[in-house]
Amino acid sequence: MPTLRPDRARPQGRAGRVGRLVAAGLALSAALLAFGRPEPGLAEATGDPLKLTDGFYVDPASAAAAYVRRHPEDTELASKIAGQASARWFGVWSGDVKAAVATYTMAADRAGKLPVLVADNLPGGPCGVGGGAASEAAYRAWIGGLSDGIGVRPAVVVLEPDALARLDCFPPAEWDGRIAMLKYAVGLLAAKNVNTWVYLDAGNVASGDPKEMARRLRLADVGKVRGFALNTANYYTTAQSVTRGTAILQALGGGSHFIVDTSRNGNGSNGSSCNPPARKLGTAPVEAASPVDLQLWLRTPGESDGPCGLTPTLPVRTFSAVLAHHLIAGT
Image (spheres, rainbow, N blue to C red):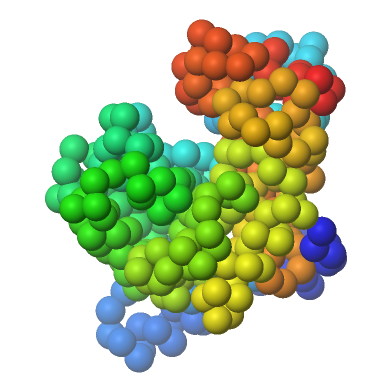
């Protein structure tokens, strides 16, 4: 298990927020003098979103939060799930992605908190079962909208869950095209979103040889971004994921970082990734010790993995209080 470390020394409260804005204004003025062109938004180009924020953003529009507003008597779910920071996923269901992302990241920025986004729109969806952008051109336009929606505001982005881990689901003739779309997204986000940490999704403990995953990460230009993500929407323990991530790092030759999804890994995996019973909430979102940057809730606990397991008729990403309380109780 990685050793958790105390929060970095950051400005706190209203005074701290004002201090950051003053510093940001000075940085912006310097940029204008140096480059002669305005930057969208008021932010320091530090490259480290943790230095610009005070903790992770708790999304008031999450499905868990909406449930609690309808059921205020469920104080356990309110405190243990709705009150915790989890990622918001963006895909074809998001409508105007630029507007949706801008609304989300601006709300987090006003609160002085760090938002976590998951970009999930590669054509073909997982294993070619459908979903995602209609074409490569449509995907490039979509990821451009997501990038524009973030701008220079601080953020964390997990890029395309299972895209590399499940590359084998597609005919080999399509691999180069899919890698090219990931490379485009990586290059765009790295160049334009200076205060965003981007992590290419690298599957989970069961996603094959770590050397092969490292090879795929290199093909997708992982060296241009912060690193890679493990265990997204899965159940493997943090210790297992750290072992896996360390092996991938060694195969990469170092120079990268990774994050672990701990949203539902408190009891580890039973081999199923689709609403399995007897799973449990994991460690709440926290900054961790290198090489693990962060332990995050990339899935909101209680959201369905699909019509399977404990909820055989519940569509993917639909929130269920039944699932949520199973995770709270570990049953």
